[in-house]
Length: 611
Image (tube, rainbow, N blue to C red; front, side, top):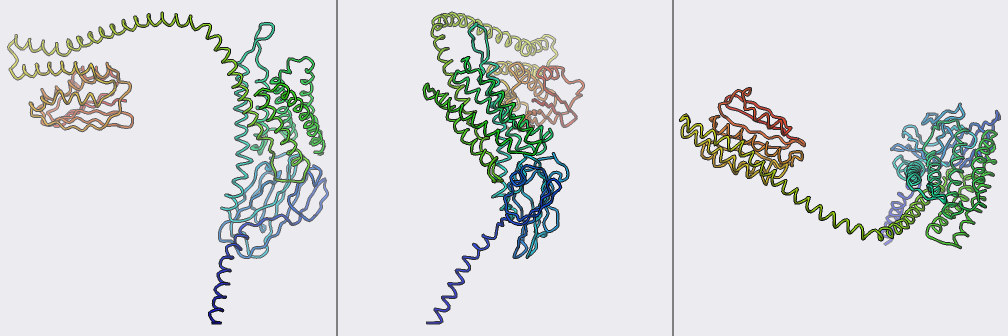
């Protein structure tokens, strides 16, 4: 009994260990590094300090430019069997990464300021398994920081490359880089749409002249500013020096806010109130002041100036939006309610971003305000639809007053159209009759005339005369068939030709081989071209029946890409292609198709390529 119990205990422990083993390895699958030492050099002074990530450079060094070297040791039980990777949510401005003394990646220059900004996007660094070793390992990261560019280092995550890239880097990259590109594109589309509306939607002024709706212009300016501001997240190397580029980005941010408020100004109808014209000057001060404060903040290395100015802007925007909301409560409509909701949400998100990005020590977080452009675009679309519906109602009233006159005019036009249509049908009937008579004269008439001459001269034998009359009868039947022949349907034409000439093949003792695939209609072959094709084929086949002394006639038709290739092949005695009937070339030229003639004893080919 004890033996069974002891074995049961051992099996139970083994089962527990077996179940716990994957969990243990799962816990060690990803390794987060957030501690070590940091060596900074600012204004020629070097300091070594303990490190605890995240490291926000502007908070730690009050915005002064410099370089830093991070050393983060970690321990591994064994060398991984698969490649590893490092995920860094935010690092920069420029950086260099080494593992156990081996260089992994360099982005930007550590010796030159005002270079690329690689802190805008997350990074994935591949780590070959051979660089890792059991026991102690050392990850070294050097960065160069420029004033006001959010330099620093967020916690690092190490682990199998597939897991780090697929579970961490992919989502972060989609959110910050791909999201920035898509949002920028969306803002650009909305901006172009609003600008087009501004160009094409005039409004009548009090003086009777025409002016364009200002609300669409300000919506376009706001979206264009935001497209450039959000698109900065995908630009690692700006086309301007950093201070100039930073001033432009702040101007875009303030320009977006000012233009959005002026858009609200027009929606509320305040642009007509002379007592509120000071708003234009206030918006100009906000944009120009943000540019001046940005230059002061970046050139002196004091980000707190810009942080303070942005706080003033947020307060001013919040006060304006509060007034807009009160006006909406007093005189609500769909456009104002929607715009008020978007504006309030934008202010709340702006306060959050100001606290997280400009005030707190958080590093690696991104702004949320960029997504308000989508809401702003939706609000603009809703306002445009609402105004379009109002204009449609006005147009409907106008149409009601004109409906009687239009109805009378339509009745007159209907009578006139009926007469014209009847005349057109008569003309078409006459043209068709003339075409049939012409075909009969050129085809049937020619053969009958030839038979008459043979009889009068006494030159033709009875078989030759019979062939001539049969050709005349076959051509007459084909002329009748051409009346109902669909345009471009080469397959239907060949089927009708086979049906009409089958008795001739049987009587002449010539075997017919039929190799016709399913054919796509040739769109450019109209009724006239189809008749040319019909008589060209008839003439080629008639020559075989009368002169070739052939035993086999083969009809081939197949698709060659988008073209139809049609061939008439016989095993007769052949002829000199230079003396071939001119009518074959003339009809091929009239159809605009390529004609190829090949003839020798035992094989004669008449080939047409139709596209």
